[in-house]
Image 1 (cartoon, rainbow, N blue to C red):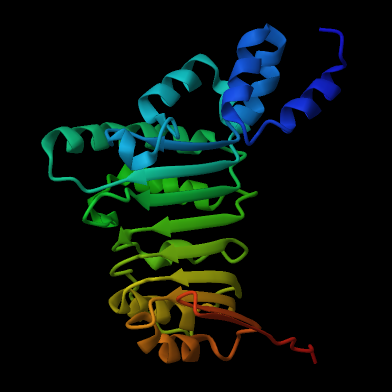
Image 2: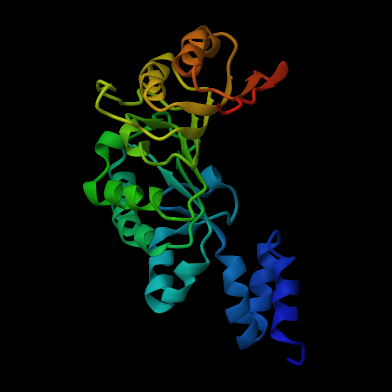
Length: 274
């Protein structure tokens, strides 16, 4: 190889949207292998025990394989910037055993990803039930809590989650939080006289159930939400929207609405400081 390293690195950066080409480059030369890793593992999906049809063709890595990669090459952990994790509650014994193995591996992997900026925890699309936070092992929950407090964390998405404790988000004021198709969010409202939470910058609520919104509203009421993005089915989500808006009306400066693809509405208000 005669090209300067920074030139090769720039060329590889243009291949981020083509994983097959990146992998081919990595296999073509030892030097390219090291340079390609930062792009190959920058945006990854981890799963275990799901059918390939659930995730699409070659779209993700099994946690068992990724944990072996990290054991062999720990520096790979430093390259991960965006992570999506698939979880589910499956009554099938074989699937349940695979999920337990998956969660144990994740409890070890997540604290190693110090450069992570975005994470999505999602139930698998073909699973009838949302995955329940109550059923997850403590080691995994603590690993997720660690990730929420990574200095460079910018966005967290929870998709098809049930019984997630909103209090875990209390100190995530600068992180863009998205709740998508979530059920039964948990929050025990505490008196706010003795609690002073920092202003919470951005919350996106998409197609969540009415029961989920009830506890989410209690959490919003205590956290001075500034930006709200809301979307959902016209038939049920919007019945709860007036109460949702009232919960944050005193602090809201930016409101974005997406009414089931029929229309969109955005409102921005600038408050001048006295």
